[in-house]
Each structure stands twice: as structure tokens, then as C-alpha cells.
Amino acid sequence: MEDAKDDLGSLVWGQAEQRAAQGDPSYVRELGSQLADRHAAAVEQVREYERQLAYVVRVLALTPGRASLVQLCRLLDEKRPSTSGSGLLPRFVASLLAEHQYVTDLAATVFDRREWGRLDELRACLFHELVLRGVDIDKFPPLRSWPLERPGWHALAWLPVHLSAFESDVDFPSRSIRGSARGGPANLPSEGRMDPPTPRTSERSALRDIATVDVYETIVAAVQAGEWGDYGAWVFMLDEAITPDQVPALLPTLPMDCVDGLGPTGRFEIAVRPADGIWSMLFATASMGGMYGSGVQGAFGRLWAWRSMAGLSGTRVGASVEEVEYQARQCTWFHFEADADWFHNDISADYGIATLSADRRRIAVLAATDTD
Image (cartoon, rainbow, N blue to C red):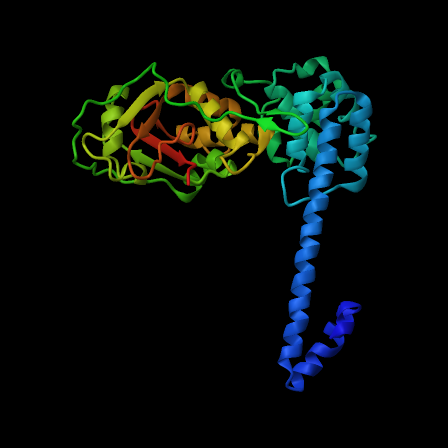
């Protein structure tokens, strides 16, 4: 099979079937072995090209100035590079651009649809990256006109074109050409604490989880997007209205995986939080991701944070972001941690969120963990 090194393909297509029929399966196996080796080498070469290309894109994106932007747009528009990794995804490139480039340069170059017709996905993400960073889009005509030109079917079209008060205090990663640093969801604050006294009751609540598949998927949207290790969501309808100060004692008794194994004296800490603080936690979860991922960046982080807020607050399906914000402000929000088996209690890698509806008859819970 020495000649197989020179023309392996002709041997595969010309002899594999014949040799098998002649009772020589070892020959066919050897063909497969050589193909597997060549495939592995080719895959690694492709990965190396992807790493190199992602680095080139990063250099152009992080070098301020219109000259770099023009060359980057030309590369992305003409070659339309795709990758299985995150380094070439439009949402990642958009995040780099928003962090390192001047808004005037971005508006004049990236948002020129006549010059770069294939960059709508990059523009869609970059627009919301800039909104989140407090850019007044009305001051830049290309940005002001983008909501009228963007594809109406795009998922990001649901988001508002101006910054909500909920979104005024968000964290972003810090990137350089060869490195990056990021934060994560906030730890349980000392203010607003409502820890229930111990020992707590060991009696389990008779309430049952009524979350439908759609409601569950909406609540966990941000955590799922951030690719955290494990998460869960539950919704309970109460027999009668309760006050917010009754929630801390009720939560540990509910039939939820995240509090299984929590004894009467096990640590259960909880604080009431403003709704915008919960939104920021969800945004960090989705946008920056877990320990082994890079998240979905700012634009889609914004989208999935609002989706999770909608599910937790019980906002109707199809509602606008403004409706979600209004509904969320009527709810009472809680942030909790526990020494239950489900959590690992690593810093910024475990949290629980609970919300009591405006009528005080519905409790929704989201729990997330991102440890091994």
C-alpha cells in the first residue's frame, strides 16, 4: 500500500469495495486508518488557520482608526470567514469594535451599507453594543437610520434603540490583542438581607411547579446562552397572597432541586434586590458566559437578559421590552445562596433569583451554577 500515500483517494474509490468482496478486509481497514490520520492532520491545520485568522481580525479590530476599520470590513465582506470558534463571530468582533474604536469612525465605516453589503449581522450586534455603552445614536446619522434599515426578522430587532434605566450599570470584558479580563454576576450583597432565622422548618411545601416548557426556556434564557454548567427554573402559584417578608422562609421549603438536602440549619442567605440589579446579573451571565466560555457578548447578552426577566416576571408572551420593564418593576426580587448539594458556593459561580409577582400570588425561581 505504499502507493496509497501518493493517491489514497483513487485507492479508496477504486479498490475498497473490490478488496472487501475478495475477502481482504484488512486492506480496507488500512485504507481507513490512513484516511483517519490524514483527516486528523487536516482538522488540526484548519484549526490553526482559524486561530491565525481570528488573531488577524482581532489586531485590525483593536487598532483604532478608520484605516484599520476599512481593511477589516473589506476582509469580512469579501471573504466572509466562518469558524467553529468564537473569535470570528460577528457578535464577538462587534464587541471588540465597540470597546476599542471611536464611534465616529464606526458610524462612518461599518454602517455604510452601500460599501459593505454583507455585514448586516455585524452591524446589528455593533448597534446594541454601542447603545449599551451609552452612545447617543441620535447624534450619528448612520446609527440613527440603522433601525429603519435593519432586517426586521432579526432577533435583535425586538430590543429598544435607546438605553433603558435598567441597563445603566453593566460590566463589560476588557480585551487587548493578546489577553482579556472579565467579571461576572455580583455576589450576594450585604444590604437588603432577609435571612430567615434558624432552625427553619423541615416540612416541605405542598406547592407544585407549574412552569411550562416555554416558560422554563424563557426563564433560563440568559444562563443557557452563557453556557453555565447547570441551571433550573420553577414557577409556583400560591393559594393566597403573601407579603415579601414571607418569601425568605418559604423558598427553602419549595420542591426545587436547588434546595434539596438543605437542612433546618444549613446556610440559606437571601437579600431583596432592585430589579435592575437582577437584570445586570442576568446580563453578565449571558454576555460574559461561564468559566469555560466567552458568552454571547453585549448585544445578545442584552437580548437574553430581557428574555429571562420576562419569564421571571410573568410578562405575557410577545410583550415589548417596555412592557417587561414595567412588569418587572411591579415585582419584588430576591437574590439567594444556599449550602444545598446542588450549589458549589464558588465566588461568582452560583446564584439563585426569586421574584414575587405584583399580585403576590406567583413565585418564580432561577438557579444557576457553573462549577465542576
